[in-house]
Image (cartoon, rainbow, N blue to C red):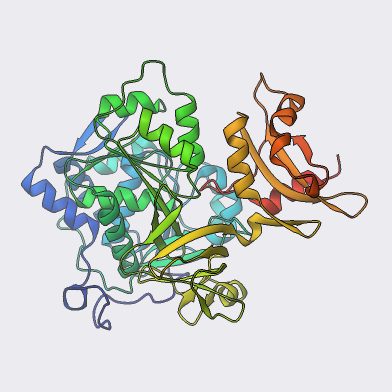
Length: 502
């Protein structure tokens, strides 16, 4: 089986150019498996993973890593390969990803429900690890396993030391994709050097330690959760999986860290049990959108002891830590500018945001057009608008596509959505502009209603928020609001849904 899709920059682990990260140029970058081995040697009975009521110690986790690395090492053609992984169990998904990393192999995680949309890409990778029936057999080389099959592999004795030589900084370790807020998701390569910088950001901002317990609230397909899980393990903490009852999980497993979308945080608070005892120490880190002030205040009052709101992108990693006033403090090592249409920096004026970071990828894979639009002279342009009060602070104004033009007035959909959430309680809502039969754009509020809500009731509540200058507001009920996996509204998809002939 020959390698068919070697990511850009793949190669051997020696002879690389000096790294921009201290200490990596001569010694290389240690894979996460080495950190696990370190903790297993010092504190073998400490817990590494908790899932389905089972606690896996560092000694057990290290042994599982050694065995699985030996199994996978015998199946893969060479360093620089790419392997796609579809797996549900947190414990085993982590084992796959960390084993592949230690082998110098890039991993790409996908969900079974998304297999069909990824079929073309899956044909290009060197191996697909999946459960039965996830991917058609004719799609390419596969290692199809069941939970019992994984257990058989993990029951074997370790077959010598794993291939855990230091990673070359330019070694691809992760294939990720954009959130798909605008257009189709695009794939990009995260190297060991980029991965190291981003993990360091999580450690700096969120303070993981051997006493931490990080609740993985969704799948490791989401890069923000993958990175935090790895950061927690590197520091000797524990990663916690299900059950679905988040309140019982936090209580029974002593969860100290949780990372969620703002929409998920709102749902958590909406279903807070009566008499719920707030944990003594729970840090909630949010990603994927703004946290309205009232949501922040409710979270700190009823659920969390600390809330860390981050602004960042899949392309560059974390950019700012956002305060209660909505102003973000640029994180160390990252440079942010707001520029005009001629790419000239602006201070105190609104413009396009651009970012330069050691955690930035170089390009999109196989999409030169998108790369040309979004990457320019070492800067990444995320499609956001903002204003910088000073060179170290950024206030986001929204995405370019979050602003719609209604009769010559530029409307910030995100700002309006935040106001509406304060006065109505649908299951979900989203705003965009739609073009009517008269060829005039109107503002539309799409709502997913609960059993006790009606459009007429909501219309009365939200009417005061809209200026008469905006013309007639269209309210409509939908089954769902199209969102990315990180919770951002896909406004083009929402507009297409609303304009679709009934």
